[in-house]
Amino acid sequence: MGRQDKSTRHAVVAGRTLDRSFYDRDPREVAHDLLGKLLIRRVGSQLLVGRVVETEAYLGKDDPAAHSYRGKTDRNAVMFGPPGFAYVYFIYGMHFCLNVSCLPEGIAGAVLFRAMEPVSGIDRMARLRNVALPEEPRLSLLRTLTSGPGRMAAALDVTRLRDNGKDLTNSRKSDLWLADDGHRVERIVATPRIGITKAVEHPLRYVVAGNPYVSAKRER
DNA sequence: GAGGAGATCGTCT
DNA sequence: GACGATCTCCTCT
Image 1 (cartoon, rainbow, N blue to C red):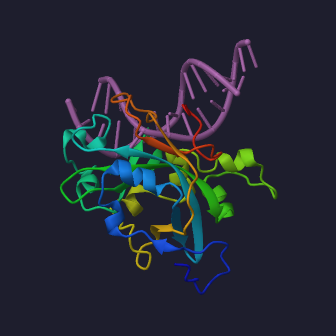
Image 2: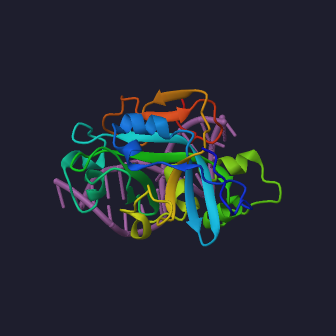
């Protein structure tokens, strides 16, 4: 580990890119293990980097809350494909949400990214979110920059047209991927998922305990 | 700080 | 034609 990138002028440099086998597991395991990993977007020569602090697992045919519950459609096809690909959907007429597919091809499963702690490229993220960032931004402002799936997607300029079906395991060819920089989170708690009306009781939302960047509602 | 309602459109019935 | 894996703004306390 620890091989430094040549262009170290960026505040943070990658780490080890998560490979396909990482995602080829039960979404609950993947959602749990993604906490603390880096989500990285390349925009031109700039890297937008955040540390994942909140995820949700969506299972396949046994999960009434999952988009894949009723079977494969054009919209959710990525969830049924091979692991490690981006499933991006449009919701409430205005927001995009980013997921990564899990489990082998043919078996539906995904993890929704719900919140991250901004690490690098914060100015750019703020612009993409249409947020004015003062010289010394307050924690309260930074906290709302990427807390929530719609906010995260906006801050990383993720759209369905551009990113749905994108391979997240290839940092050389792709402009969106995840990496492990060796950081380990202290404690993880599981809570019910947010915003759903079916299967609400299952604790499939995973958050880094006490982290100020998780989305606010229903902390429990 | 909490709670409610509106915005807005793709997807599925 | 209804609804949704959400966010923001506004009002009330």
